[in-house]
Length: 419
Length: 146
Image (cartoon, rainbow over all chains, first blue to last red):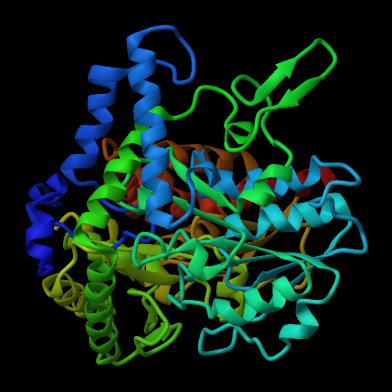
């Protein structure tokens, strides 16, 4: 099948609307959240329209249908990630997944393989989103474990020169992002995973910026836990995935307690259900899980390879065009090698917030600020950046519109540079 | 273009030539305020003489709206009594929350009426208020020391 973003766009109703006095919507903020195709909107609303009931409860037809749809969604996610059905935990998003994990580590008590003490070490990287930094930072504080990290080089790559000094034999967790949400850098996992496993540490992969954009297979990556959010993968908000290796999930203590997650309960004690149910307390976000399955079906039908190739080509074009603008400085790798189609930059003395505002007046949606990766932007010596992130529905005209918009902003603010 | 109602000349002028920027060595209170959604930062020093705002100096990094707004406020509130300054502060806050329905009283707000357009851009109201909230905080702290 030939991939054509113009055809893809027809599936996304939002592109029919206009922005700010009739401007075409140029949506370059998929790194924050993606737009939704009709099939996802339909699947979610159709669940409410036709099948709504609480899953795993109720002796009636609707409950059966709801359970089938919800468990069917789990199968779709398993297929998407190359894992098995029992390894898929639904969460409300990657932030919850990572907090669930970090708190579950605390809940085992001594004797549990996830229990950390002051002799243990947790490793992260300087390029983590706050969601994959703070849960580990706080787990380190709770447990007394030491937190350390891989630094980022000036060209936006992980500095792996001290691999064995950072991942030491007492390291228990290595948590890192697959692709930086600011730099676009795709991290070289093989060396890190090999070293982590050599010392018996588990690797937790934040795949929020990779799983929606490239083929991701948990077996090939050989990681131990992986998470992504549905809403960045053309799915609904309020649904995310935590995948974990079956043998690890078997020993992972629960974080949230309540209905559905138990085998039996007395007034003084409780026995946990096996995973994944152990980690899904309460009535879950069912319609959203069904919407996520529709989203992943949509992506798989187009083909993750096709999406990846499209973004590589369009990303190259974006990087090339941006670098033609004098005074524009990219942060992150300058060439489309081991990186995704996201570009963060500063532009002369126009503050990103002001640039973003001007672009918005032209119908162009970008993100500005520190992108929830404050330690990274601080390290790179920038207060804030403007970020354009691409997805399957973007085309060259979107990139051209951005370039024109940036030059327009220069004229707008420069022209106002009085006296 | 609606954008022009946001980026008034007065604002860009203050942004490019900020008033009272550069922190005084002595002060009664120093505060540091941050807009966590974008990383804009302002450090602001206040000195009081009796009931009067005797000195306001500041330093900061951020967008034109946040930096111009603190520049305007430092010009405007300097030399006023704390009570008068409170009136200005309340007036300005009300203007920012007006969603574009108010033009602002230029006898009270002077240059700050140029910020009226900001109230039509919800995402930017926090930028405009950053310095004002810092000032409010600093005065409370300075008064506590009296």
